[in-house]
Amino acid sequence: MWRFARECSDRSRSPDLDVQRGRPARASAASAPGERPREGCAVGTQSAETTDARAGEAPKQRASTQDQVDAVPAPGQCTLSELLAVLDLGGDVPPVPARCLPSTHGGVLGAQLLGQQIVLAERMTPNKITHSLQTVFMRPGDCRQPVWIDVERLAHGRSIDSLALTFRQDSLQICRADVMLRSPEPDFLRLRSTESDFLGPQHASPLDRPMMPWEVRVLPRADTHQLDQWQRIPEAPEDRSLWRAFIAHSCELLPLSDLLAVTGLTPTKRLAVAVLSQNVTFYDDLDVRDWHLFRVRTLHAGHGRAIGRVEVFGPDGELRAGSELVGLLRGSAI
Image (tube, rainbow, N blue to C red; front, side, top):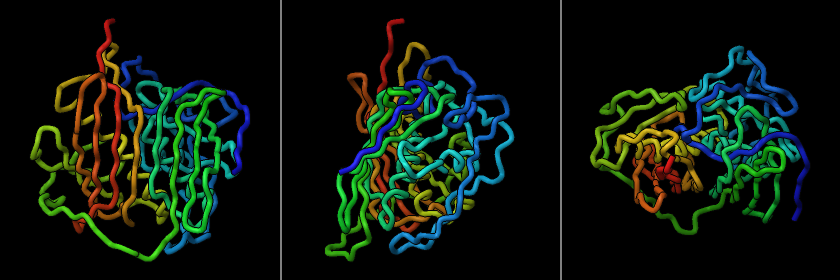
């Protein structure tokens, strides 16, 4: 077992969805470790092509950010190139520096963190891919400040790897993720879950989601607390690690925001809303350039918590990924 750690400078932090936490909105620019945020700073970082092929996958090209973003991203929204820039982590030796997208609540976006966890874990375990990750968010953090990632190897074998990734600002932890990775293996037993009771994307209505800079279409609701959303990312790079990162990113954004939408609630100083923990599991290969259906359900709300589940189906109706989220949802006595 080995462990990396080192001191650095910054502030606290934790997860978030594309929903305000009830904290005052504040604009903030993506900043690089060791730099102060400044007007007009670029959020891009330099990246090189990676030609080490993952087992059973085509050689991947990491997101190129040679064309730097001239304008600071607006809080609460992003372009695909801006999202790729924060997923293009700046190093391989821990502690690894990470950038942040600006948020409306001033904290670090949980969706961004999940994507970064997948990209970094797969970079540090060649020839293996993410099977599952479990993340606990401890603090909101500050999206204007740089983030550092400590890495601990929990297990290593021929067909399995397990990493613990701790995201921090200064000495304060924002979140911790346990990532399980696997290598390709022949099927000993094959059982697939399929779904056929949903309509295709041609029957869905286009919807603009500011933190999902790709094609999104929503089907009519079959149930008040069920959302069926089709999405695809035709411009996604040929990089399977990024594909899985995009799936995790989407899974974090949908459950609590949909619950607030159908109940008519709005995050304010009197309503605390936050993601406390989330797991994501990848059952099979997927290509985000094809249509995928995200079926989002609220399983339970009570005792100041909300539980949401996301199932991700391929265009053939096969279940490709799944996620479950525990959120904080309670009013305050202000």
